[in-house]
Image (cartoon, rainbow, N blue to C red):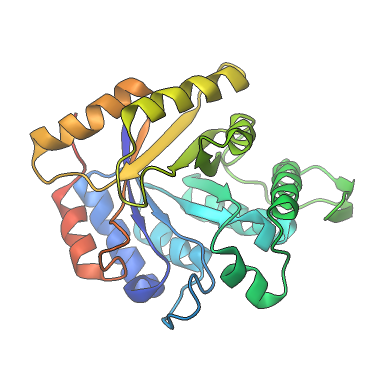
Length: 283
């Protein structure tokens, strides 16, 4: 089991210097990764500062040496695949091969897509996600790419340099369980970041549901390394943290992503930094 810290890309965390400070604290305290959200307005009726996730992660990369860095999650349908491929590849080179690309449809759809005239039909967004991931993976090969798809086009182009990591930067895919389609999508890549209708952001999902999810995803994928990323708010008491996370690890989880509950002040630095400095849970 590995352990990550999860922060939004708005509020206090819109400042790259703040995110770099959190990354340094996480590395020093023994965490394995730092993940940031990828939103442009989130809920637009609430006005607050935002930072571009790749700029935030670049600051974190320059300030650290060991921890993994990535997004949870980047809505691929909201980005052009060639631009996303280049941003991730640049960060992977800058960090010495420490990037993970977490992906998904993104939400809230009306705010994040509709506000800018983008499609809001979930079926269309899912098509763009699948086609976009296919293209990103091809661009990372460094080979010449020609593609004429339903949503994206590439005409005899090669994007260099390639990422440091081979055969690619790990791609994790988020989606709601028990919906099967996003789980099948995740099974084609390197990891799954399941969300649960029974557990809001920052709350731990039921172990039985995790076990069912892992069994289903395993039935859909080829043998080999694969990450199952679960998250929540862990208790400060080590024994209680083990009681919470241990059964999830036994059910097949490979990452614990420390997330503050959304009914708390998730945009403030001080409580996040205090938790980070305490270090990850121990099993």
